[in-house]
Image (cartoon, rainbow, N blue to C red; front, side, top):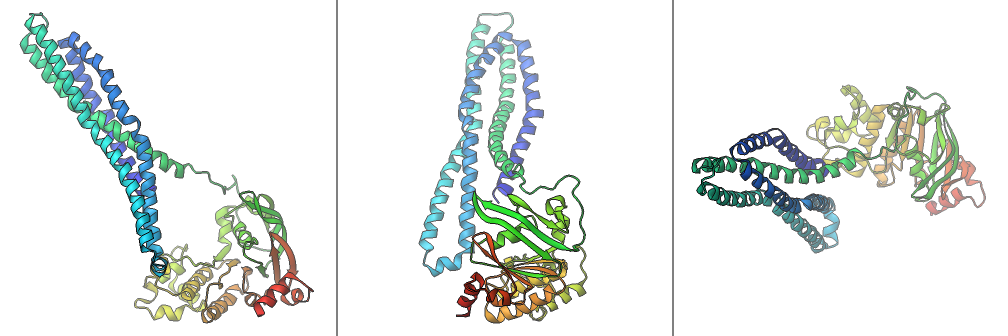
Length: 459
């Protein structure tokens, strides 16, 4: 957030300063210097001889400004992060009496930011008085030398010409001061450009091939062929082979960390496998257009993500010019229509930031209504009911069953009671498929992994 707002503003200020420096002030300086050379090349040469000393002093001050500005922006990012975490986790902070801890954390981060920010501002505002001071020193020296020449009766330097010379030289001070200030501003802006560039030039890990194939419908099957995937060299999926026929409901079960959600993330290409391929109707998904591929899929996650807009806009998210009749119909199927109508503005009522005006079950039903509205042929349910109470789960489960009608569904679940109707249950343990079959078939396997999980949950 700091890079998007504060750093971009720093770049804007830097650009305006550099434009002024490039197009206006150097022209003034050039005109005045030409006049000074014509008036007295001796004095002018002497003044120019003092310039390297001035440049060295200004350079010494500005050299560390870019590094200090970079550190300052990083500390500002940390400060905003602490504020965001404190506000979003306020209930936990109060519940554990951790107000002093968070206040101390904010204080320490704020102190670090204040120190480095003071250093940056001190250097930045030092530019103008430093250039004025050095210019004044040069004027004093020129007045002394020019006065000596005038008193000696040098032909090219009379008292009136000396006064004119000094007046013109004093006019150089302001544009030179502007150039110096602009240079310092550019150094500050360069630090922000470095930070923004890290985002703009970040490597795109999921890329679309040139001349990628369009895909508008799903006709036959989804196939995982020899899929391997690792997080930081730690294999999460190991040689996954699975065929899902159109219209099937396939449930994926296993303990936490077994690789279930990773399987779900591979299908819409949120990540790509290290080895192996996923085929839709016999075509590797890496050969397809990413937007078309994701249009085929609807995703309902464990933590429903809602936006701070109305019910209608959340349900019709991603659809241009939606029909209100379709929005209402989707809400009815998801068992969301009744509680939406109880709000003040009905479908135009805001759900709050992240849906904070709704209960967990209500948020999940809006998420399901969104998937119904998108009407995808492939449905991915990632533990959609695991965080709900029994009553909310019953409503959501009924909505999910309606959602899965006539669709190919991949259901990731912890609660085995919610997936007994699945056409095929896939059991994953430590990244490998260890069992496959229907609920009844898997229960018959003596000492089977699924049977053991089911017995635990039955207890």
